[in-house]
Length: 238
Image (cartoon, rainbow, N blue to C red):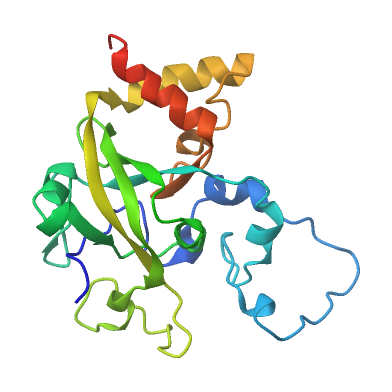
């Protein structure tokens, strides 16, 4: 039996082609003046795109040069109906699940999906409250099951149903996460933004933080320096 489900955030549109230019600018490939060569068939050629309006994942592979150690995962702590389903799933909801564990399903963005496929069991992530009155980091979770097939893509009654995905070659994946602890204090987006702007100018740890450079993604990577700096904010006055 799969773990209890987490609801998909509005930050993850069902159609990955609707991603904003902001999300995909860093992996755009220059247009060649030469005729495009046909792609070689095989597993690598079938990988999907993380860029807007593209079905080719090679852009993501070419851009992926950093080994990420941690993550930031967004979900909504306040009630919001989507097709009659309440999308609410905050960190308190995770704590109430059996073994405080749930599957992170419903991701319908290629880049976010690829990040989940990179996740390793035991890695920690920030649980980020999004699409609410005060967005920010509420706690820490860990990956307890590596990426596997997201069954909701095949369920016609599910709001995450994707008719273009085939069971023999599924498009979408999910991971299982488990509650670790609440952060010592809630770390709001507004505070993080101040540090990001400062670090972008001075070269500090958050200078390239995906929360601001790839803001639409509901699953985001963090390098060790970013994760540790944010943890250090727990002990500071807001």
